Image 1: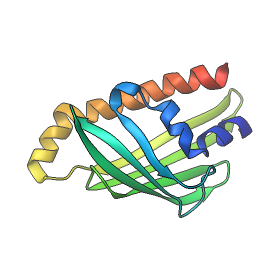
Image 2: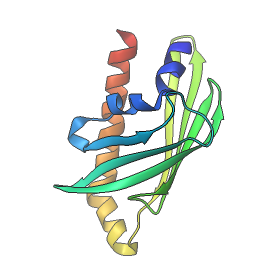
Image 3: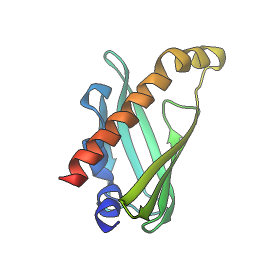
Image 4: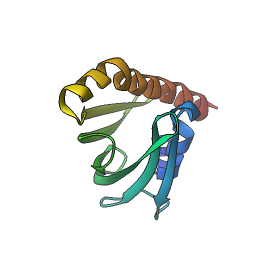
Length: 137
């Protein structure tokens, strides 16, 4: 648990967990360790040569159990991401619960169905693979 929590509670490690193909850059993160109220800014590529600013806040932290990041501004109308950590006989089970709403009404719903949901699934599938690689090494 200590190893998993230390890794995930270091915001800059998010770069290591995001596939390069996604186009994701942390642009500001004042603290090396996560804490309630922490603001993190990013740039994310939403289309070829189109970058969008994304600002999130760590709104809730329970040491070695869970934390929540919420979008303050960015590509989604709503983004609420809960990270959970549960120690078990095999190590640590980490889970991500993401609730998001696309902007732009019907156009956003169509974009989600054909593009965004697939991209998010790719990101979390790749994140699962990278975590297993890094933390089992």
